[in-house]
Length: 469
Image (cartoon, rainbow, N blue to C red; front, side, top):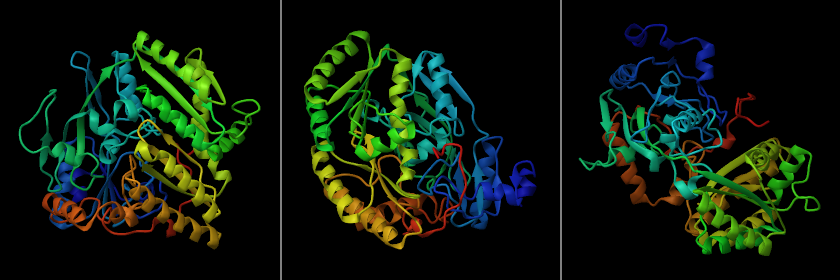
């Protein structure tokens, strides 16, 4: 039926195509029965109408950069691959981007920049990940503290309900208050409530100037206490990236150099300020005075080329962590600023009690920290320690008023912890919404609500384009 309606050029059932769509960056494979690559948005509706009629599970994917297993077709069925829907149109007068779901985030940013505009959400996989996937997971990035996350830039969505019916949530206007806000309900729903085909995104003017500063500190607690003093001065960096000692040592090993001469392995904070020339000039004065008082070392970029060299430290750390273990539990937790110090004290205890390296880096401007529990998969003792450590991490994050995910979502990987974050009434409310919009449960089944311990599954030995190592 699917092939008859759409044709062999759209529907693939060969083994190679099915395998390529069977996993995402979590590298856990579940073979689908067919892969559909729409060339027109209306073809999404055809797939969903048939799937709903015959109760076929459907998983939607862009590039598959998600680490949570969100795009893995755990129940088989059909995969809709949306990479072919990638058109971008910039409305330079209104400051809006009209994009299809398969457009890469970096391509949207480049198209906006050519027209003098800026699209801030910038996940580290932006050269690969798609706007549709970013909307599904409400992706963030390093600019989140100042500018916000994907949700803050979505003006309108169009797409399809699980029945195949076409819908539009909002219009290409700056205001919209006509009916329930189902647009925001779709954002972050991980492809479980509908399929995004296209979006209208808000753009902001390009910052007139940028200034970048790399700072080092004697230890993590001093770094955190120091940055909080800067925040208390109402200084708002565009980017504020933190790397702890383990992350820095990994980056230095990968780069075969010391970030600050004579200060090997010290935690660093990388700051970038963006805005008007006068605003950045005033921030520069304040921040240099702060760095002189609190930092063990600091170095400013004199131009964008030097700034890019400083950013190399941040980009190298994640992939370099695999020298500490061949497996990683990468958790993107969020903490309120008032509990930063308490959280890092907890991390030091967790490292001691687990006996595992736990390099941590992330976005201090919004509290979104990437905690990486490293272990060797073949070592039963280390595996048990990693499982216990991630459980302790999640419970402590929630106890400190934080969130178990800031930008990755739940997918499969965080299903054991959804009920750590949410009580029974909250989970039931979410399940009621799911049943209302997807009564036959065809869209991305097996995710979020059903507990899966993804680290117990065998991982594929494949190298993806965005893998650091």
